[in-house]
Image (cartoon, rainbow, N blue to C red; front, top):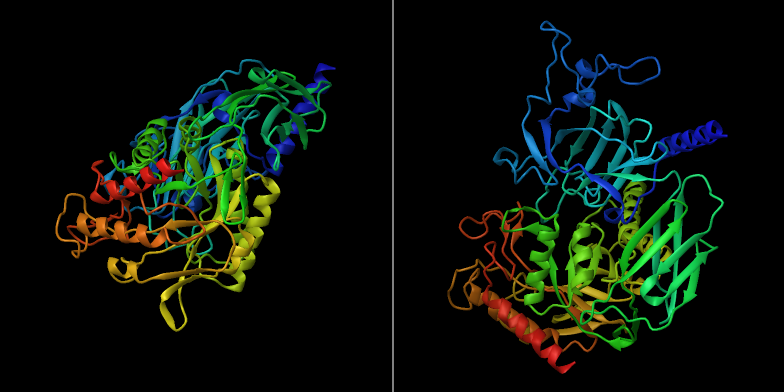
Length: 607
């Protein structure tokens, strides 16, 4: 019987390996081994380790020849006469997680392929357990090999992915080789043109996950839409079925329920305390199935819209927000750690924010979990930015996959209240169709949160001082959000006093961007561009203008802190940075910081 069981398990694993694998969620609360640290790397702008005939050789079964092959073989010379034109052992190292651009000056602007190698030993706790390698993100196209065998490919720079390695794993001398290519492509998501640094590399955590043969792969547990005391959700198992019940436990609420309908369960609770910015209450939630036990910390809250208001836990709320890029300005690189999250969200708290817009792509999981702990509401965004190739079916499928990966990762995070489909995408029929498909997928996966997009405004025909928001995609969103730069790209700050707004939707409005640039420490009069005084006056005039919008339910000015952008190269001022932050890159507050904070203090006082 044991041999039959083992055969069944091996066949099941082989099927998963061939057919692709869905995402494992809640990884940080599982049995994991970190592979973070120093990885050897080889720069490969000509793709020699992938395409060059000198490295390509395969056996009759189309497997790479162990005696000769690409970089993924990590071949060593057989003797002193053997010619091998690469060596991971002799190559330098990069820290993982981390972008390559900020770790070596030679790589600051590099866009192309780098090969990584990490050697490790691993012994499973029990022989029948399964093991996966998990990447929290790598930018942008990633090919993964273990011990010379290809595991698969992932496309997308900001979402997690995993591969099963159970049948390839050895107790000693494993070598994981990862090809990461951050070249921008027209058909990609995001596309060629962006306004942020294209950080390359294995930018987030890498780990091994050990699980039982059959395990809880991912799950959703949240308040049912339209209710205040009914918990609903779903559980996805991976592995051969067991003769046992799946159960969910919430000890503090005295809940222990057997779950019969894994795809759609619900049960009533009493005495629940709602998660909120004022009281970010999190409950231990434990799911049991056979030998698989998964524990998470989950908050319960409601979010909906009524007319032109956002209703949070039954009451209207004003979202006092700020935009954030995933960058730690103090060490000048891609943010990824809990410490990075504490820094950025702590600065947002200093502004008296209860809300952040994580632009323009999914940020790392530490940011979302820290927002849960700190009580900060979150807008998460798909990297559909500017002029995507809307007519390309593969681009749509790529965008859907990235959206599904981030929803799977973060569906249990109480802080996340808005899924954003896109940013500043010009209206067209193909674009509208594309975004409608994205919204449809998002609502199918999660109907408990709001949907929006950072749309554009325009001047009314014949009335240049009347700004109109009439994007047809707004018919499909719960919240109307738009970016505006009156006083920066559109006239001077005094123009804010003359502008009127027409918004043709009875929905809540979030102004998803406004602001202007200032070099921290540069002072002059309020008409001098790049001075802190200009930015300060722009915030004063913008807030006066925007607070007259009757549907206004929140705002996320652009943005928290200066960040790197190769589009911003004015010498002595920008020097490769977007200077619209309220903090400079040394952490100093600009004068506009205090204008926004004063406004947010007033709103909180009068709520």
